Each structure stands twice: as C-alpha cells, then as structure tokens.
Image (cartoon, rainbow, N blue to C red; front, side, top):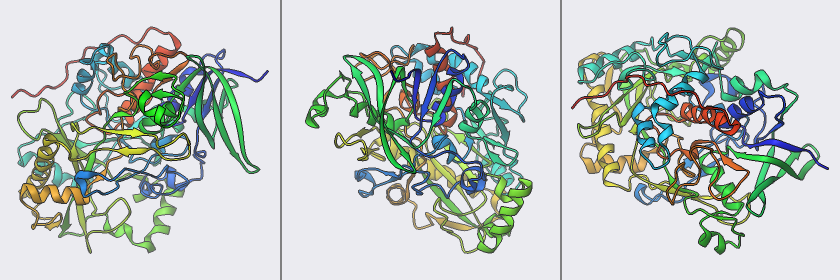
Length: 552
C-alpha cells in the first residue's frame, strides 16, 4: 500500500513554506510539499541577489508568465502578470518589500460575517511570531525572535532624504515604522534581506529544517487536481518532471492544503469540481461542491511610475551600465556589499488621497533611478521615480478555467479602472505624487518630469496615461475568500473549503479584501495563524495595541 501523508501542501511558496515548517514540528506528522517550479538553488544569482529582482520576471524558469484577458478600461491591453514558479513562490522573485498593511485592513476583514477572529488584535501576535525585526526595537508591535529577519532600508541616498523632506513640505507626515504604531506617513521601509541576500519564506522557513525525517519537499511537481471520494478529498494527481521524462502519480493524504496563490488555487479548485456548478457543467467537469465564489472577487494593485530627470549625478543610473555589472556582481558575490546587495526600494510612504477615507489609500515607493521593471531606462542621464497606486480599489475581477486541461492557463480579468472610485483615486494619486515631487526640497534635483510629462495634466489625460502605462504591482488576492456568506469559499476558523472535508486553502486567495500594502507579509501571517488552526491548537491570544487613527 502506498504511503498516506498526514498533510499534503500544494505549493511551496510564501504560505506553503510556513506550513511546511509549522506542521512538521511534530515528528508524528508526515508532511509533503509539492512545488511545480524548481528549487531555489543556492547559486542562483537571480534569486538571491536583491538587485537582480527584475531578471526572473518573464523568465519561464522562475515565472508562470500569466497575462490578463483584454482589460476593457485599459485600451483592451492584456496585462502581464508574473507569479513565482520556484520554491519560495513569488517570495523568491518579488521586490523584498515587507509591509503588513494598515491595522484598519484587518478591522475591515473582521466586519465580514464569520471573520470576526481576523481583526488586527488577532493578527498582530502572528505578525510578531514570524518576524525578527533587527532595526526596530518596539516590543508592542514588532517581533524579535521569528524566522524572518527584517532590516530597515538605509535610504541614505540624498534623493531619499529630499523625498522625505518634500513629503512634509507637501503637508504629509513622517513615520518611524510603517509596520508599527503609525503606517500613515513617509520613511524607510522594512525589507526581507539578510546580510546582502534575499531572505525568502523558503530560505527562512524551509531550508533550516529541510532535513526533518517527516518532511518531504518535491519540486517540479505539477498538481493536476484534487481527487475526491464522495465529498472527501483523499489525494492529488501529480506529474513529476525528471531527467527521464514525466511521471504521473497519485499521492494520498489525510489533509490537502492548497497554497498555490490567488490564481493557481482557484484553478485547481475548479479543475477538481469545486466552483460555480453552472460553469463547471459547461466544461463537462463533474461537480463535487457548488461554490460560486471560487475564482470571483479577484483584487490587485495597479501601479504607474511618475519619473523625473535629476540635475545632480546622485542617482543609481550609472549602475545600469553593462561594463559595471562584473564589478557589482563581484562586490556582491565576495563581500555581500555594493549596489547588488540592496533591493533599492528603501523608502516611501502611505497617504490619504482625500478627507473622506479613514486611513491611507495610496502607497508610494521611491526609487533613486528612472527605470522600468523590464530594465528600460527612461532618462538619458540621472533620474528618479515614485511608484504609486490606490491600495483598496473597489474594482473586482475573476479567475476562471477555460477547460478541464490543467496545463491551459485560466482566464484572468482584473477590471482595472472600471469604477468611479478607482478613477477618482488614480487622479488624486498622480496629483499628490506631483505635489510632493515639486516641493522646494526637490528643487536642487528636479530636472523636469519625464513621465507622464507636462502634457498630461487634466483628469481625463491622467486616466488615459494610466490606462496606457499602468502595470500590475503583483498583488493578486481574494479569489477564495474566507467567510460564511454565499460567495465565500473557506471557513475562517478552520481554513476548510465549505461543503467538503479533507481540503483547506491557505494563501492570498483567502483574503476577503486586499491589504493596504504588498501582500507578502500578510500571506505569511495568515499561514502562521492557519497552522495553529489546522493543528487544533488554541490560537495566540489577541493583543489589543493602540494604533494611529487619523482624526478628520
């Protein structure tokens, strides 16, 4: 008889890595992780050098290489959407910006029926559990003994300092810690970089314990679907890629946990017969459980770059010269120093776009260089830019399989710029970015706006530019949301999929709403708490900290 695992984790990304560690702490639990991508090899510069973060995007060895359906309100463009296909998932190829979101995000979660135990007080102890904040000594909000070491971006470049000063001149405030008492404001950001190397969830949670006898990690393992006996999940069909070719296998487990993320998880659920029965019937997929919310409620962050030319030679632009690369690589390889040791997203801020919102709805990432994700240089000489975008847009999309073929990518539609709120906040975002970047503190550097440029000024012109230039910030979420309403998919108290047994979901897809921040940290927080729920442990006691609330 083949082996029966206690826990089978589909996806070795940010959530899967956390669960692999926590569920295997008890030696009596047999745990297996199935990751479709390859290992995060120790020698892989693209993964481990922070400054190399742009190289994996679009590369089939690291990236699922998704793209959206034509986006109606963005000139029918198909928006490219990279997702990590490697041990560590998107946490192995992201920008290494570590942000929890605003406490009000979790208060918003807890307002949904059944999600009351996911307010900020219940989430805070799990944020603290997972992190080791080495530069912030705060004991109320920050953790100091977790596996994920965090450092504060130094933000020493004079452009950062000018940007922070300009934000104050524009009427905003500074903050010492966007992950602490006060998110609202501008300052240095936390990053998951340790001694000049990316510290992904896989490196923090899996590699230190990968030799546990009760833990099996299998990469190049493509899960096709979950197999049910009646309403009980009993295992998965998986294709292993080896040097000898492909091998199909059925792996049996008592509990199956989907950790594929907001695109892969709803895809697997639908392929396995869980979703909108009317749609599944059209594809001749046998329905196991009718859950119309599977794949719905897709949320993301759209972003643009507002770019300026720099009058002084203080930007990072020279580091893009090809002849410098060997020297940058050598400094990083042998000393873990130099431009290669930073993700360069060392600071930014959060602001409210108007007085009607209760907490920040705009995020700013400042970068002391003018360059696109694909490496295209926008300024002939020195330049700088700020990445901007609304954080809790009311635009909603979907993830929907096109057939019963697990190798056919699903239809993905974000519906960016489809709502009045979204359009208003985008205009406000660009206006506020310009307001900051044209303050007196920036005068000695301001060589004129490159993008969108002075010709783009009216609200209609701004929206046309966003539609033409906007890119995803790579934060898809909410496609298998927690809750107890008719469109929910997952029980918030157990992480079990409604209506079936033996199957749970733990990843960004369970968010009811996208967080006011990058989603890397919230995903791992959810996984830390989910581990206790899965193991039947009493969750950590809530911590009722007093956080900053803006008073209108």
